[in-house]
Structure formats: C-alpha cells, structure tokens
Image (cartoon, rainbow, N blue to C red; front, side):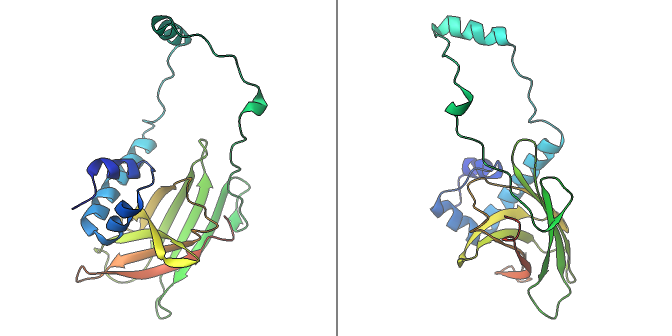
Length: 207
C-alpha cells in the first residue's frame, strides 16, 4: 500500500514523515516521484510569492474576540520566549551572508561527475539547498538528492528529485546537519531497479 497522498503533500511542505512512511518512500519509486512533483509545485508557489499572504486588519481580530467573548492576554516580555535558533554558520565558500557554497565529488573514481551546492538561510529562517550537477551518462534517468546520517549510512532522508541537472529544496528544521551531514545524488538504474550514487560530499564543515 502506498503512502497517503495527504501525508506526501505535508512532506512536500517540509513536514517529517513517520518512520514507517519514510521507509516505504525510500523503497517506492512511485511515491518518490509523486513527492518530487508535489515539491516542485511548492517551490513554484514560493517563487511566485504565494506564501506571502496579506495580514488581516487589527479590527478583524477585535471583532472575532468580541464574538467569542475572549479577553486580550497580557503581553509577554521579550525574555518570555526562547531565542530563535541561530542560522547555520559557514566555513566553506561564503559571500558574507547566511550562505555557503561547497562541491560534491564523484563516488566512482573513474567518473568526472561533480556538483556545486549552495546552502543559505532565507528571511523566514528556512534552510534552502540549491544544487547544480555536472555528470556524464544518460540524462533521462530519475535523479534524487539525499541526506545521509554520517554515523549510519543506511538512514537516508529524501530531499527530492532533480529537475534536469538542477534542484532546490528546503531542509526541514528537525534535521540536524551535524548528524545528517552527507549529501548524495543518485540516479535510477537503467533497468529501474536500485539507484547508483553519482556524487557525494560532507556538509559537516558548514553545518
């Protein structure tokens, strides 16, 4: 049985999947393709600015409180809330902002495949990873990007599918890049069974 489409929609928005659903996703090409398509729709929506919704006027909230008979809670001091997490620091290629660049090397020593990667933090605190792959071989096969646990390579988190040689994804805040520190790009085998790792690199230097 395939993963619930509603769960895939939430995953495309950055919500983590339950372990059983994630395990199914790793082994199911159909669900991975569906998730990749949903992630592309989300990225297009973000590029078009659809997430920047207009803030309702203050008087609307006043009317809602009156209708529900609610009172206004006292304002909290600045120290009542925990500080937001600090943005990822960078020791790789930097431009002075919350942005770092690094390269992935070929897994096969006889291959000249490489990938250029940029990790940045946007105005909402989201970690955005952009990737451009340069690799020989067939271009029609499905290519996926993964985060891999450095202490347990069997644990893999799918970022999404590449659009040609390019990919842009949001890294969920629940993923600690100190643990999920290996980035890998793989290509589906020509017979449709299994994936072949093309490039791989360590994010530990910039996490």
